[in-house]
Length: 397
Image (cartoon, rainbow, N blue to C red; front, side):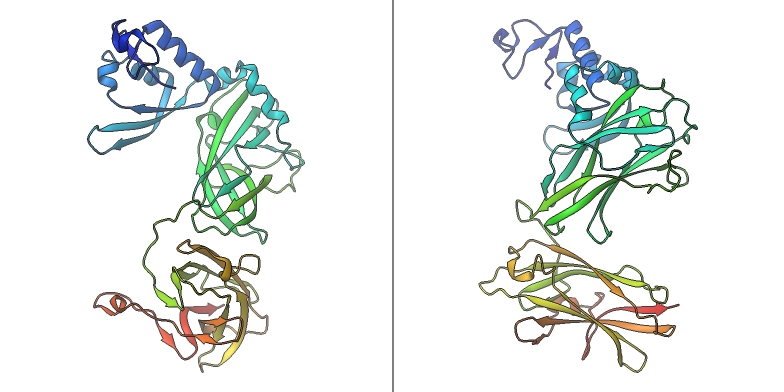
């Protein structure tokens, strides 16, 4: 919504309310703020010349009296704008009397969980603004909550964690928040609408992902229990989200090494001290250069002992067989999470994890090319041996 010049002269903007600058009286301004706070628990205030359009600070004072400032971002540049986020004090009572248009939320998307009560908070409904979204954008989810009468009291401060998982149960994206209402004292059966946001990494592979929600104690990180079902999964399943490729080419970093026309932007082992028989997880990010030639490649992971002998090997498609490298759009990064199960027979000790990059069509091993500037003094250059690119030292315990 747009604000006018508070108590400005009627002639402002030629008296036309559709002008860029128009007058609005004090009573109308306050009524609009009350209406806004009844329908929403959060208010974003984009301040630009507001000391001129609201010289008495009517809007600023109303926000200070009725909401908490939780985010404040100055905007550099010629006009010195400012973006502020407020959480409304009486959001619970306001939403209980929200316009009838909001009451349809509970029937728009059934939640797949058998129960959604955690502590004394119950999730009544959840609806993403869209169930399909390009990578690199933010997924917004409208939720409706209610405090359960007679349930054991919840922790003093409750946080929400909105998460996206792939079909293997690996975490792809996560955004935590601590909305004011989750920790406020409220009358039982009062309904509150909250909009949650989940930014998606731009390198997320296209595909279907599971959207889930976790409630936990902010101080300890302990998930809130479901008192109606002690064996319930702390994660509440919401729905399936379809992720597509980014709509525009993102700005990405420099390559560590390059195989053929594909850059390796990042590579790390998520757990370098796995338990015996446990999985080894490697995270990597790739980027195809602009090229008339495209091909499908295989990543070959090799685990070497102290004698440089291969004791275990894993082969997988670069990207995945559902999204092979030959289909990737140029300059768009692709994240890959490789799960490498370790053999139970492996003895405890220190191993080296190596990577070989293989063309799928003929089995040719593609040698990595290290950019010249990686060899400059003070910069870490990748370690390359006859067994491939060194990923990490793995200590098996």
